[in-house]
Length: 184
Image (cartoon, rainbow, N blue to C red; front, side, top):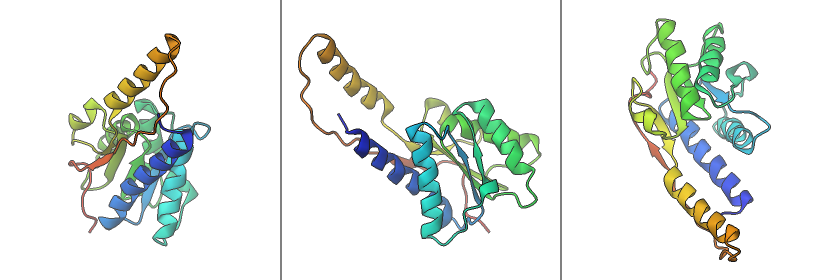
């Protein structure tokens, strides 16, 4: 299993990759739809977002950070708030794919287009991400493998076997699809 500390470091690293990808596409007005800030994943992805912007000397704007709850509707509502800003973002890093998909819906309802007007990137690479319109750029996590390894440890604990404690690093990858593009 992975230690909690190691898991959190990986979450921060992978979230930073997502934000950095948007920066390398030329975006400087990058918003974040965060998850709950009292949950480790929400905290870590927000930390990575802020830290990455600072590393690239991009101002962290409070109005560009809207908290969601990892659901599609919260991503939709958060994006509606971002679209009301006088200076709307050109890109959004959503803390998970469901919120990113909700954000895409809000953008469309406003008469705007992804990625032509606003680039969107998510996190998790849920099966629905590749079917979104446009298909969602996201950080792929090997969720099935993570669940499988966790279940093996749980079964050993239930059957009173002492699970062998070993760290496993499950690599993530940035899956580039059609929801992001170069900023003009």
